[in-house]
Image (cartoon, rainbow, N blue to C red; front, side, top):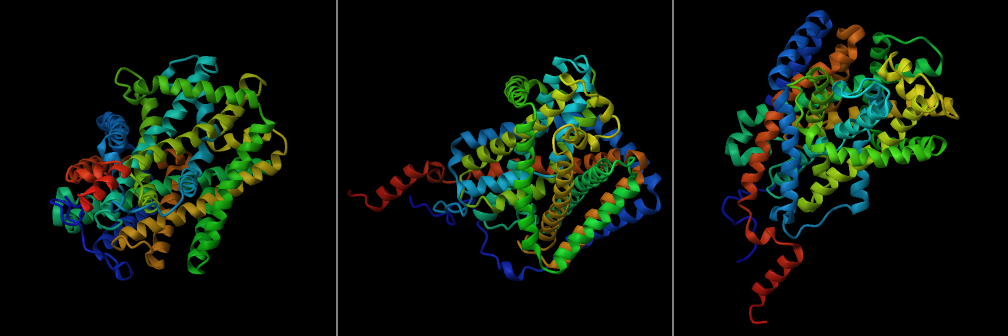
Length: 539
């Protein structure tokens, strides 16, 4: 039997697409843009109505479907593991003879850069410290050794295997259908096994519109967090009282202007260079804290927390709070799962683009394991340094935390040498993460608006970048003193529909994988030996 990808039953390999002449999808862009503008106008004209309406919708969704977020996140981990360790793990994201475009080192480095975002800067100290002084679901005495251990375990849980399994699922599906089936870099392209031609018609366009909205509000949440942390950092550096949401909105306007200028003047390469330098600077920041901080304590924190995380992972994965603790789960675990789901179109499409030629097994193991390990190291250093200050040095970190989560990183850095330099560096890091984050997310939304074109029109990129900043500003403004809660509220609401899309995507991928010829599921060396035997049967 010859290994002919295009001839086998059920493959439905699409003909090559003319990437240079893909038009703007007027339906997808028109609907998504109109809804985004309507949301911004409503929030600007009636902030109280927006805040009240989203709060009521959130209460209904978390009460009725919180269990589904929990169950689905666990399912993604199990599904990813199944694909990696089953016979499907040998299938490549591309033709059987394709090879990776990037070296393993470069590939891993780019995934590392993807995981290094505003969220890690915002929550690097804030989350472990919050859980230390307010243990999850009240299951330990505040500021106790038990609370410290539980705080790190839940932080690892929120930033470990589960979120990256979500990214792996969508990245794998998009990469498989784009590079092996020729369906293009669209979320809707993964639904051909379920929808057939309708994946390119109304139902498919609806899926892409929802993907744009998920990316828009997920990105807006990250930018809002970044703006809050920048204002908190500036206040900390200059010894000023806490700035309000108005200052955060001003920060968003300034940084979005920088983003638009970079897009208009065509200096994206400079921004990408800054992004790479930013990742190195972030690594230097945590390395400096590791060296001048409680090194042995940090190493012990990392070791014990990884053991506790792996031991309690099954229990944490399926805890819904039905017998108590649901409020805490809604504020943290459900918010995180929704936030990660809203980011899956952006991160998934990015990872798919750099993973052509990889096997499914390589993809799943590296995408889940490497960024998770980076997160574990990050939180062990930042959280461990803050823990040592409170538990061993007598510093009132809980009191500082009550002044705002956005100040936690800067309050910790202030207690160590060269604090003025490290705090200024942290503000710079967050600002560049902001600009590059808006750049990357807006490109993905532009791709979804232009039939999956890898380099969408610049005007589309600018529009979605400005829209992301406008949504973040409106959410912060409408929330007033609870601007952070407003950001969390909407991302959960938007992630709900896209969660259902991800579930359907898993079944669509599995359905198509079952049509793969047996030879494609063999290890590479075995497959080449079979092909050789077919070619030279008499040898």
